[in-house]
Amino acid sequence: MDNGHSSARKLVKLQEQEEPPGRGCPAASLVSLLHPSKKHHTKTGAERKAQERQKRTRALVKVSKRTREFMGQFYQEISLAEWTDWRWQLHNSIRTAESLERFITLSDDERKALSRKRSSLPMRITPYYLSLLDPLNPAQALRRAVVPTCAEFLQNPGEKRDPLAEDSHSPVPGLVHRYPDRVLFLATTSCLVCCRYCTRSRAVGNPAEYKLNMAQWEKALAYIEAHNEVRDVLLSGGDPLELPDESLEWLLARLHRIKHVEIVRFGTKAPAVMPQRITTSLTRILKRFHPLWMSLHFTHPEEITSEVAEACERLADAGIPLGSQTVLLQGINDNVETLKQLFTGLLKIRVRPYYLYQCDPILGSAHFRTPVEKGLEIIAGLRGHTTGYAVPSFVIDAPEGGGKIPLLPEYVTGREGSDLLLRNYEGKEFRYPDLACLPARKE
Image (tube, rainbow, N blue to C red; front, side, top):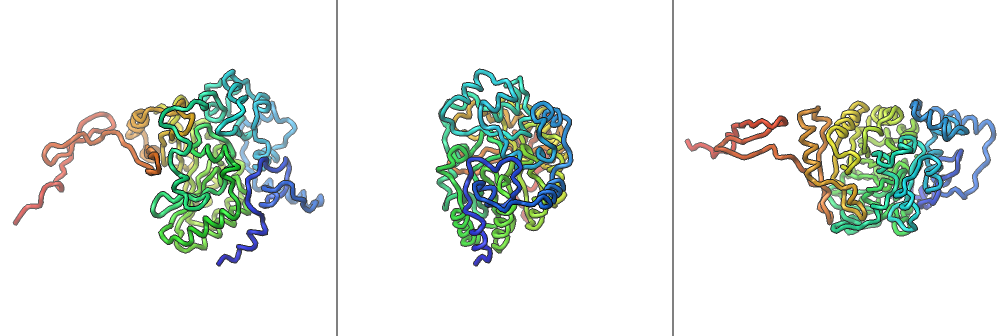
């Protein structure tokens, strides 16, 4: 079957780690990233210098003025080479109230939420993304999306731990087969940044229950190989780009050898929260496995920085079509102007707005969810007022595994005879002669 099977096992049993490797960890192998306790060959000075040169060629070139000011205030001892190393970003993620208070002034509500012993979702913020947060304003959009508040501990009617019934559509651990010709492959249950409205908070917040390993990967791959109807595999998580290059390359190669798998997609927030992950070495690997697509998760126009633009341009230059998925969030992006700015901004960095999601009813999400009418109102406010490329599909991922259901404003208002009555973006009425709906004439 797989010639790489034995070598994959030599790499390591894939398991989530509690903490990523330490700052300056040189190894990018699966062993070193997922088992930092393993001992490695001590590199010579020449080897370390060569590796540093390699890192510099792989790192992002652009560092925004805002980032430099943030580094000057909080990370004066850190070099640009370290800051632009995604492993450094991963290891130095902010996880506790004590570490977060070094950077921002916590509100009473945030401090109380962080002091709670039990939460369905841990806090994790990369230093880069932290630089985008307003240190004084707890109502800032990006801050609300990633810093816990007490509202997430309140359970409301209709909310569920697994509202999309992914677990019940999982034939093997880590694989969801809901649609006929495609599967969701959960490569990891760990995220680079923990969004407070996360659909899979049950998994991200319970690594012991949802821990993934190589044996589970093999079962998922065997399932895909045995089901010829599966032509499309979506790699998600967690965030698959938290994995090292070696494991991603191995997984893509295995999928690439399955003849009936036509395309592979990634679902990731890495370009938005840790653009340093989009290295030239990563894009070289991805280019080998076309056709490959990426769905990126963007929330707000403040996420579109020069670093993010460079990361997305690298992916696009590698021939990877980029689409964005945005969750509609109350008090964060629930107005036409904010989303118009986000979507047109994404087009400028070669990312096509794809989905606008109604927020899923996970436990403790009521403070994020808007009425469905708000999403319809926003789509109506975008359609015709900006390019169609900047107007995503507004969808509800139906509870109990019903799948994505698109919703549209009422553009068809009725019929008169063979005429279809239509309303355009300005609210004006028009008639379309729908003669094809009439019965065929008899000779």
